[in-house]
Image (tube, rainbow, N blue to C red; front, side, top):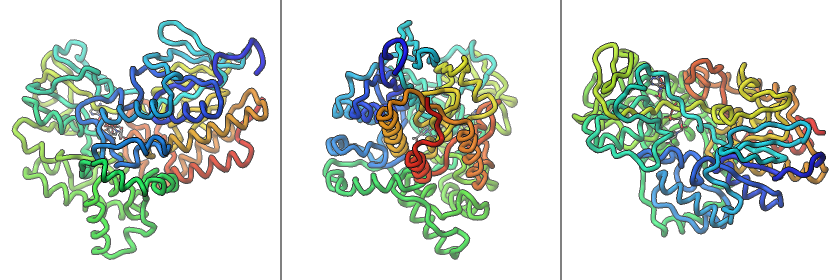
Length: 535
Ligand code: N01
């Protein structure tokens, strides 16, 4: 490394979620001088910030954990779909087992990161004023680190409490006896609503688009059961890298149109009974690419849900005859009694498409028709997915180019990891990688292994600087768009398409298959990283 002495670190990782922790483990073991920083007080990433009642993962044990033997062999879960407290404990277990704590600086926010051309290093400014320098910058912020709160006139004068689900106070909020408004019915809205319905004096959900919820089928797990099942874990961990979603299996290779109605319904029924996201990722081959196949899935889903709702007006709002979007093109949330809460006297639904919010009053939400009194407003309104956290980190590349400006006309990135003009920076779980489409740990391990191998390759050749080539980046960005165009995803106004944020360019922000992604990354390595320029 040239110029004014060595930087403080070979690599600084930002973010202590799955991607950041895995990178730390790999790079430390590969002999790099590495530091991880995170604004949160504890590791866990999303599971630190989203500590609202009911927050839990939608991938069943053992999919949502590392494949590192010393970690999984010494850990047991209490539920098939663990909640945020247990996930946080798991992260502590990982850091204990792998001995990572000395390399982690928690409670330390990166205010800015600037590439110093002269010194060939990244200069990071931490909250509080401390500056550190690093050869490589590895942001691992997750896809959902920047909450989105829509403009709501009057919110500043609201006399009750309000917060976003992803900025839930660490000390918690007691929901009992409150008059609660939940805005948004994505996965976060569903989870908090199920809990609030149990104890709120009044819970009102403000729904713009109905969620197409799938039954979770939660189960308690014992250590004995897991001890027995652990024999099969290594095979599952291998298999999950060979699927599109990073789960243990994937879609069938037959079309929903190539089987008779009985066969089709039998398969739907089997997936439905198994619960979890299987109705999404283990369904017929063309559910997400063919309108007719997709409609069959929707009709099955609707019939199941209608059987659980007594009031026909409510039924049409929650499970309309016309699909709000093709099934599965917004992430289906796993529910636990969600449809039943609307039978309770203390629960109401406002259909925002028929009755929009005009403003927030000091003690109520005022709509076009009427108002809802409340003392707690919960924004479950999602995230500026993919780019939001990275832009907030104030990253500046060559010639003072800020990342937000590089992405002004849309997200672009090579391999979903590198942006030209930003040398020696690779982000994990970022835009145009599988991230939001993929099971987190699967994606974290594929990218973490690849990044570590790349850094070792650079070290062996004494290469000081790398940068994604603009042509490779354009090719990758166009390829992700072309892959998206072959699916029904562009038909939904979802965060997958960047459509949930006013002014954000509509484009598929995730690469649609983990296994193909891994193969392309392997190809890049086998081809001596031809998509990168080196100095
Ligand atoms: O956010 P979302 P989320 N006025 O963007 C509505 C993961 N996750 O936090 O659909 C009124 O999905 C918006 O309406 P519409 C998972 O990958 C996982 O729930 O745009 N409403 C929608 O209903 C998930 O997909 C878990 O019409 C407004 C909601 O807010 C991702 O994170 C749990 C509005 C936002 O839904 C994001 O989920 C939680 C406005 N101006 C999250 N703007 C697990 O189970 C938006 N909305 C693991």
